[in-house]
Length: 579
Image 1 (tube, rainbow, N blue to C red):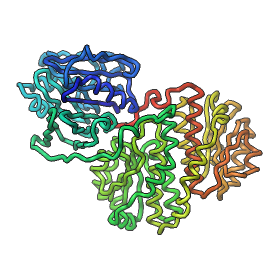
Image 2: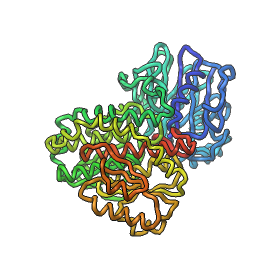
Image 3: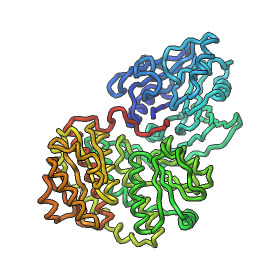
Image 4: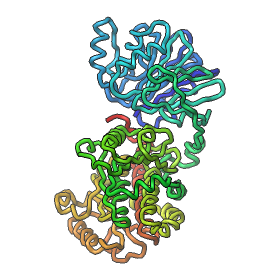
């Protein structure tokens, strides 16, 4: 959930590391730090955001450096708990992503041996453990230290007397970028792409010895080959491009994202495995879970194949269906709960599919089949275009299994989404802005659409928002309805339309204002609602996508009116790599 950056080469490391950390701000964090080595270790670390602080390159010299943005798990956010952490003698510095599960045991042992700890973090034990084993070769010390670590880690280590950066990975992402007489290391590709597109994806158990012009990778202390891959993403695609926020930019990229993601090729072997499935299970978290719920409705409607959808963190409490098919849906490919569920399914001989946006991520190395979304880099913490990309890939699967019966509906999606993006959500946002709570309701496939709309609203506005199946309101939530609790109702002209209209009337009878989102030209819905948002005339599938897009825009516009930090909402991280 944190971010780490490392550099070794011919240039001053500080500007490169600092700029790299700024590109990782979207991951969420509460403190930062940078360390360099030029015969001694030099460190600056502070609570707060690096974009709001000044790190003077003159204070930190050296052509080798590491940096970190911390999202607190052990110890409160402050200057002392910020990374990098150092050994007692100050000659070794480390940055760490992940959680060291047995840190208390290690800390007690090292304290008894005379080591002094300054922070409350689990990560500091790594620096002292490496110091314990250091005997003139930092690589060998890291080899020895990681044998004692339980949990997850992506580590970068530097030593004052050696010109090398040591990287180690277990269950936390870490990539290496190969430049011209310089090397980069990072949690993901975003900080590296400005300098090189040649990326090496480290695998679990890898330890890399990074010099300025080469890298040697080991697993179980034996050299292994990890070929670099040429990544298609580019640095410019991670810039705002004239938009006020990354979230706004990513919302407007969705027509192309949907088209590109739906038109992926699914390998014949993967299609054959899907056609043999008697049941499919989807595991995911957050927004990806909502995409999985929508997939269930579509798969059972069009293909008559039963689908289970499970929250990944709860999956361990259930028995996997042996020899079934599992989809692990994760934008980052590093979501810890989803990875744990995938590995559990593989132990039960399930055929596994990964649906992810990130080449070389952990989930791609565990699944039997990998389907990549074509969203490009998503910087804003709140998922928008990655959600649409996941829906597109899941729709492609539905299309493959129902003999392309939905291809006609999909073919005209691009201009219809563009039309939805023209809608001005500000008048509806003004209704939401002053609310104490908001309720989103829908029926059928528009129930998970309402869940996703509520999630987007609460993530970036900090307004309490809940999504409900409309029929559930009378089983408790009615007690919360009043003039200060607007209800956003998804009421499309499908089979549930008559009963959905009755639900809206029940809401109105309890004094709550209603924002209705429905099919274009629905005079009845327009008359009953306090505010009416017409969807562009299109197919049922298009209305699902367009309703989702409009709810993203509603959340975005409400957050703008409230002056929120839209791309980096408080307490949240882009990639959740801890359980």
